[in-house]
Length: 391
Ligand code: PLP
Ligand code: TYF
Image 1 (cartoon, rainbow, N blue to C red):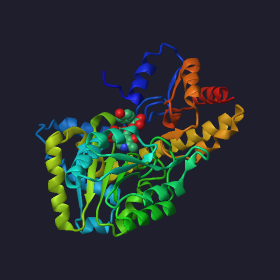
Image 2: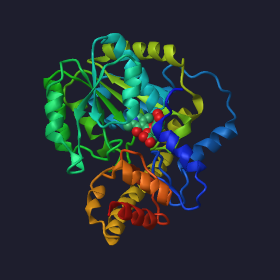
Image 3: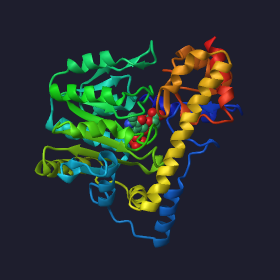
């Protein structure tokens, strides 16, 4: 038997749990106050229009819907990006952010066969899996400081500073998975300068754009790399969360080159790699995203819905900290400083086991909780249980 996915396996255990009072804080999925995965109104509008047209389903181009790719570029790089103006970015629609990572990994392995990749410690476990399977040696750089529940920035700079030139560096643009610990703009600037000086190759993973501060603010890292004069970098982006379209598998791989000619070669290389993986992406999800982003009215509607999700997450963080303090556990104030769907709660494996066994509350063994699964109905129950196992 091959081992199962520890995150998705936890959801299976949760679903099989017969208790009525149970909470799944394991998997990273945003659910609303009612505990449901939302179907965004803007998405529904496009979907209804598509259904009314009843269009045939031919293959998409290998690199996806052209409008999707262009709209994605603007979301990542901003509306008046000199890089886009100069034609330096090649973007392809991919099978989720996961597909973008895999296509990027395979492509890099071909052009830089001896390069290693450095990922944060800890990182989304699939980063190690995907790059490892693509043939990369994966090394860690320090990131999370368990003592402060924050960033070990000095350790991060020191480790990045020791990497050999040409090493690929995987960076989470915002809402770090699994810790919820992010860099601020000044820290990003320092990282960008170090990466440039050491001739490292940044690969930015942005799976939660709009889930912390907003669409542009959450893309700070990308904007700083774009402005840095660094000639090449990669971005894996995902709409799974920001459009609540998990199962439609909507993502994109963007690679920046030195000039328009290099971008054209990169596009050809991306298409060659996609062809060898899955031939072309799927039609429906791409049409939904492009339909929303391409209409000023629906885009405004989507931005408001995205803001609603982000604000609800902020409210749940604040509410959890407040209720934990009320239950005699004031030491969790750091949860409010963390960003996005996740928090490294600092709970031990034994405490996580107690939460599951005694309370039906499911968290990852690392102590990661998904704060986006909290709501006004389960907040107090979770706070009371977390406080109880922390005594
Ligand atoms: N990167 C990170 C950091 C993630 O947390 C996720 C989560 O699913 C992904 C990439 C992959 O996104 P997708 O579901 O679009 O493949
Ligand atoms: O970290 C998470 O929970 C999300 C969802 O193999 C996820 O990123 C988890 C595991 C996995 C794919 C997606």
